Length: 430
Image 1: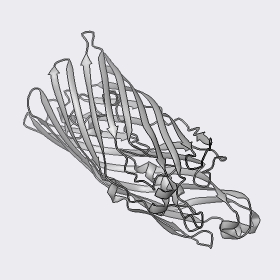
Image 2: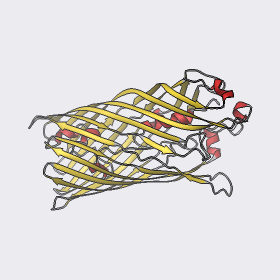
Image 3: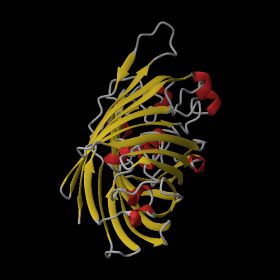
Image 4: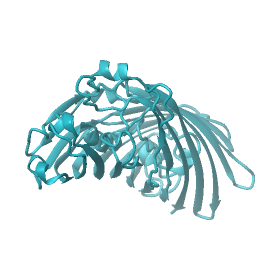
């Protein structure tokens, strides 16, 4: 059982890491969400602190913003590897509630602005239940993560600005899976047990930088970069429910440790102002997932059924393309719509039940309306991920499935994801 917990720790950390693919949570402002999740070359509200710290100094006001986006997502699995099989299952996922909060301020007529933000750029909850065919890989996951970002920006002349911020990431994870204690792993059939892992990641630090260039009265160009950081879990708690005859092989009070690089993200964006009331934007993101080569798990106490492991992941860099726009009616109502296409970093044979990832498409819409110094923004995002089949042959080639022993990190079959995500933000000018 050398790889007993590899997939379990993977879901904890990979979901915490996902800034682009996997269980993506790019919901840091509902004006931008309604426009296809783009914001690198925009500066109308305080969410610029996240998308491009350099852009926030072009805001014509100081401002604060709070908002959230409930996530209603369903993963599906079909056993496409067994001839004439009709077996399938859908997850019963908890509703995720990522939030964002910002404040941006600076002296009147100053070229300097300061900001502070708190948001959830990653996090997930998935529940496959304890009866499905992949229960030895995962039953349920709950991930909570928050990023705090102090930021400063400076405007150089009338056309150029630069900004930078510190990324402080904290988080925790709790997950459960079934232990198959049959003759293949124990020599005798002890039925099934369970394990719960509960860990808090050490505080991780990174940085972000951004610049904005007003090329003309019509065109704005933005660039931003968010650095790679490493999240570490040390001394995570383990809880085993196993027959008494095996209790000594799953020591009470044992702990685990693991680490994972969170990818860097580079973006370039353009905003074109067709008129005072109509603007279009485009953005391209490059995500450095190739930093994730393998997952290494270290248990404080090892036994014959509980060994440390190193499992290859070999992720590839991925990219996201965004397109969106906003039109303001004479009544002051803002109408928004957008689209994005997000490629997966997961190669064939490495797709797990926790991250059954595929290229995905996001369709967005939104409304905004100002009432005095208050701005209300509503958004709606539909994520569609086409079904993706992972074959046994692909898993064997990737060494994530051993046909001789039955040891596996993945469950071959066909997966699909759909998600509906409404959102609301309230902003205040001061």
